[in-house]
Structure formats: C-alpha cells, structure tokens
Image (cartoon, rainbow, N blue to C red; front, side):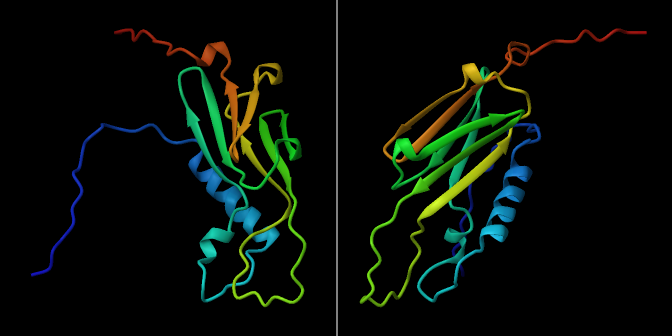
Length: 159
C-alpha cells in the first residue's frame, strides 16, 4: 500500500482572472530567450537562470505593488522608470575580479546590467509612485487612480 498525500481542498468560489500571470510568464520567457539561458551543468537547475530578476506583483484596494529580489545590487545602481503603462526596473550588478587561476565547476552568479518590465492595467501618476530598497529587496508601490480604488455597483433593471 502506497501512502498518498492529499491537501485539503477549500472552495473560495470563482476567482477573477489574473491579468498579470500570462504577460509576466511570457515576458520572463522572452527575456530568457533574448539574454540566453546560460550553460547547463550537472550541478544546477537551468530554471534558476531563466530570469535575472524575480518579482511578485501584489494588489490591494488602493495600489499595485511590485517586489523584486535584487541581491548584491546597491540602491544607487537601480533605475525605476514609468513610460505610459509600462513600469521598468533596471540595475547594474557589479562583480568581483575574475579568478583566472581557479577552475569553476559551476558558475550561476551573474553580473552586469539587467532589466524587467511590467505592464500596468492603468496609466499611473509618476508623482505618486514610490520605490524603496532594503536588504536586496526593491518595493515599488503604484497607487491606483481613484476611480479604480472602490467597487462600483451597477443597478440591474428588471424589464
């Protein structure tokens, strides 16, 4: 008899379509294709090489928040830009001097310039966007326009 694992299933009702999942995955795949996925080695997983910047995009009633892992980057080397509905983060990660005499068995760390873009579902006011960087984590908060901050109820007429 084989033991089986089961996770409790909870019904949360119908979930709204996630506007970000497909574009983010597509963007991640395209960035990996354009920049190259690196060499495959017997010591590491190629999945860790697909995107130079790992991000989460969260939403609450008043804003969208992008959280990006940027270990080894200094705050002064990060640029955050907003052009139309495109939020773009880019950074320069400076590396150490190369070890000419050492033989690498695995080399996954990357250095140089990298960027990541996210399309917002609304035009944002650049004066209201704020970006904070602490302990290798960049947090960019983009407030929603006031009309999007509250749920609008529409009366249904019986005819």
